[in-house]
Image 1: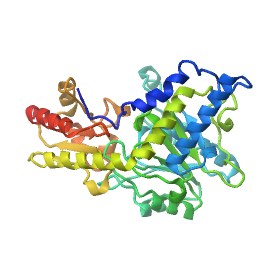
Image 2: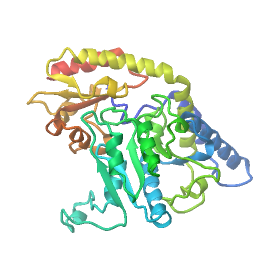
Image 3: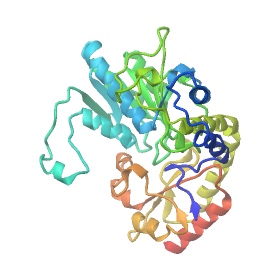
Length: 397
C-alpha cells in the first residue's frame, strides 16, 4: 500500500525505535523514584529528551512540559490560562480563536463558551439544540479568509477587555495553510493578550523559534514528526521567576513542575526526543525532498481538467495538499474506501471522521466538502508513490 496520509500520523523512524527499545526492556525505572540506578537513568533520559525537544523549538528545557500529545497540551493551556485569569487577572475569561482550527482547539473553546455536545446520543437527548451551560468563560470565533488565514486586523477587532488568551493554528492540518503567527503575536501582545500556537503540523517541517516568534504557549505531538504516538509537549514561556501560573488539567502527583500529573512514559519521551533531534538534523534535506515531491504532484494534477489544488502553494506548507475533484458523481468517502487497499489518503482531519469538514466550510467551499482529498507527504515518500496515486485517481474518475 502507498502511504500518503502523513498529516494523520507519520511512520516511526528506525532511529527513534532503536532509542526507545531499551526503555521498554531493561531501563524500565520510574523517573520519579529515588536513589537507585534504574530511576536515575530514567530521569536522566527524560531530561536529555526534554533538552532535544526544547532545541527543536528554540526554547529552554524548563519551558517544555511533556503531555500525551498536542490535544492534551492545547486543552491544558486554554483551560489552565483562562481558569487562572478568571480569578487573578481582573476577571479576564475570554479566549479568541478561528473557525478553522483543529478540533482540539475548536471544541475546547465551544465547551468553554457553554455549548453542550457529546458523542453519546442518550446524553444529547436530554438537551435541546439551543441549551447552554454558563461555565464562566466565553469564546470568540474569527472567520478565516478563502485561503484559511486569520487576518491580524480582524483578530484585533475581536479583542476586548475580557480577552485573556488567543489560540491559532500555525499550519492547518487539512489544507496546509500557514498563518502569520508573528503578526498575530504582535497584535495580541499590543493588547496584553497571551497567545498559544498549535504547531502540531508545523513542527519539524520548517524552523520554529519561540523566542523569535515571541509566543507564550505552543503545542506539538511526537507522532507527526516520525516519533511515537501518545507523547507531545506544551511549551510555556518562562520569565525571570520561572513558569507562569496555570491551572493543571490533570491533578495528582507533582510530575512536570506540578503542571501535569502522572507517571512519565519514559520510552515515549525518549522517542519524542530522538525524533526532535532527527527533525532538527535533517530538516533542510527533508524540506527540499518534500518540496520537490509537492511540485511533482501539483504538476501531475494540472493535467486534469476537473481537479484542482484548493490552496495555492504560496499560502501553504509543502507536503499537505488538498485536492478538489469537481465532478457531480464524485464522493471522497466512497473513493477513499474503494482505493484503500492500494493508497492511503484522507478526506481531511483524522479527528473528524464521518463529518463534513468544518475547515473546508470555513474557507467558503460548503458545497464541496464531499469532494476534497487530502494528500500528505513524508520524507519516506517518492515519485513512484505519487505516480501510483495518479494512476489510481485516473482510473477511478
